[in-house]
Amino acid sequence: MKKIFFMMAMAAMVAVSCTKDGKDENKGQDETPSEVVSRVFDDFENGGILTWTGSGGASFEIADNPSKTGINKTDKVGKVTASGAQWEFSWSTAFGGEEIDFVNFSEEGYIVKVDVYSPKANSPVYLKFEGVDVPAVEITNVTTTKANEWETLEFDYETYGMADGAYKNFVILFDAGVTTEGGEVFYFDNLRLCAE
Image 1 (cartoon, rainbow, N blue to C red):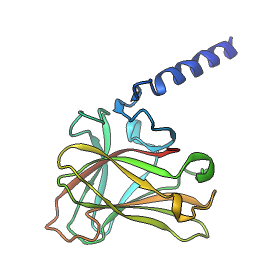
Image 2 (image 1 turned 120 degrees about the horizontal axis):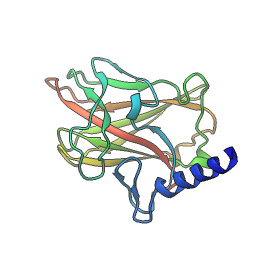
Image 3 (image 1 turned 90 degrees about the vertical axis):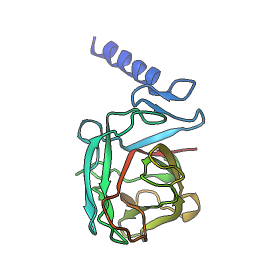
Image 4 (image 1 turned 135 degrees about the horizontal axis):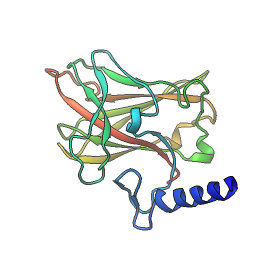
């Protein structure tokens, strides 16, 4: 009986994980049909998967989605409130918690996608992988293109020589390198690794 229940549960998970039109029924997120998600690092539902901490002046909390429209109709998201400092950031705990689940890029893919809701367009967003016995790798050429609307930002690590089994956590910077008056709020969600 347990075996039958397990097989039925697995079939149900496969059926709802991603339909042919690319809509993820579990997350309420519209994905492009060609997106192949190999790992979800965090979606902030049910308390989140990773633990995030604000640093350099930024604060972090899990909050209600400010706009359940477009590509992101989930309930909960990550919220970063800026202090205005030039290099403030939020960083995550290790993937997998106490049992670190390192990333195997050659098997899982090199493209990290994250849904972002920014108060302004043209805001630089940096995403950095940190690891063990390897240098951190940070992509610094991505900017938001929309204001007060969800969009998916893409960070492609394929040409950075990412070693399998060496990277364990993230650092994300909003308005990276920009000094402001402070109080800007950035939301992010559905941080995922994609094979394509």
